[in-house]
Image (cartoon, rainbow, N blue to C red; front, side, top):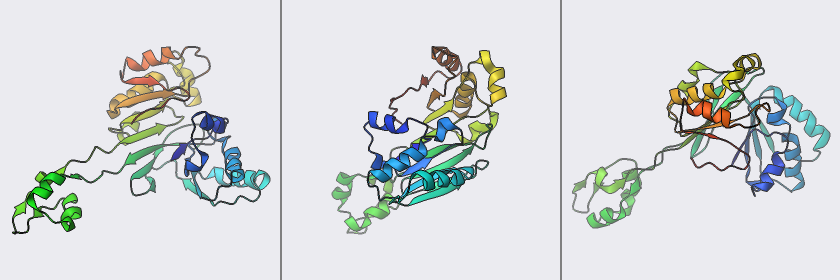
Length: 272
C-alpha cells in the first residue's frame, strides 16, 4: 500500500477511512511544502508507538532527508523499525521503485521548489490458461508456465496446439498518475500517455491564470488540456484555492476541454 504526500491531518484521514497504519510500506513525497509533508514525522512517530517493526521506505526530494532526520532525532527516539530514505531526482523521468507487480516512475514538474509527480504502472500480467482446452488435449501440467509465456502446447502424441487456443488474454495493466503542484507544462502529456486515471492539480480557474503563473500552479482548463493531450481515461481535479467557495466552476471549466473529469474530495474512493 502506497501513501502519496503526507500533509497535516493524514493520520486522522487514515483512521476515518479505516486504513490500518501497518499496511503502509512506501511513502512518496512530491515536494517540500507544508501541505504535502508536515504530517510525516507525526505519522512516523505513531508507527513507532504502535509497535511497528516492518521497514518504511520514503521517496522524496533529497532536501527532505536532513530535515526529517533532525525531526526524528528530536521527537522520535528509539524507533524500532528501519526507515529507508530514497532521494528522488525531480528533474528526471525514471523508475524509482519496482516490485513483482508494479513500477513507479518520477514525473518532473515545475514548481517554486524541486517537485515531481509519480506514475504507478501495473506490470502486464501473463495470460490465463483455458483449463478446459488444456485438459481436452491432455497437455501436461509441466507445460503450463511455458504456455503462459507464449509457447505452443504439445500433446502426449506429439501434436502441437497453437498457444492462442490455450489461453485467455490477461487483463489490461492499470496505471495511475499523480501530478502535484506544477505550472502548466505542454510537454507533460508525453510522460502520461494513456494512463487510466490522472490526478492533476487545478488550483485556479482561468479567471486567475495570472495568479497560476505567478505561483507556479495550474488552472482547471490547463489540467484538462494535459489530460486530453495525454489521452487519459479519467481526470481528477484537486488542490483547490480557498477563493473558490464552489469548486464546480473548476469542474465545468475542465469538462469543456476533457469531459471525463471529476472533482476529487476527502474520503473519495476511485476505482482504476
